[in-house]
Length: 250
Image (tube, rainbow, N blue to C red; front, side):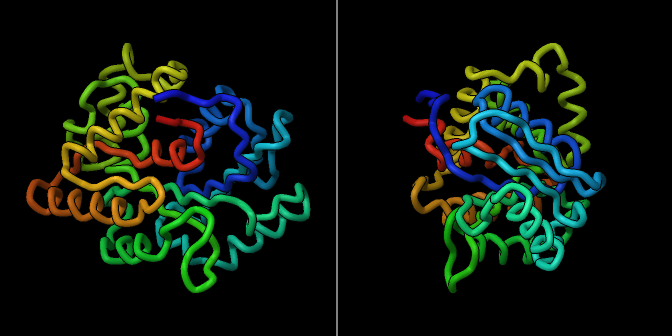
């Protein structure tokens, strides 16, 4: 497994729920380490930000209207941002790979059937059925902090946490090991190995070219475990993005 630092990826759009942590994480990986150009628009800031780096690989990061996963279907709000991306930066969303990054925190996103329906609809980053715009739902159990933890802890997917606040507490208890500023090429690959080990240990089939079924199986297993134990296994789908884009290769 290796990280391809000079891989050109074209236009990538991340639609995220958080207004801070996800932006910082994406900046760390895609701009600081991989050198891609980055555009961002946060819901609590009126202005856009654009970095000046590789113009052949552009990563845009925007918020949904609220942090609730239901905001994914508030198309008027997102369409207005898409129009601004096209007008300001010639960033054509219809030709971008789209990743919706959300937490499976049962306290903030309370409707598992709605999430399951999204997983059945948002299946591919570049194209979906019925002429629907590309986009795949990328979940973290219970929150994006699971991805950060997987960079540094062996067998992190065997750790359990009920809420995002619990995952944050794990980080705060291991600041000597886990920190955003310690993320590097080695830790990115470590997180990807954790990702693949979890899928293998759970007995789930993994097909990078048809990931939708894997995504749904993971959701069902995590939901079943939560119903029985009131907690999730720490796990994030974020590594799939790097595999899907060819930035990480076997």
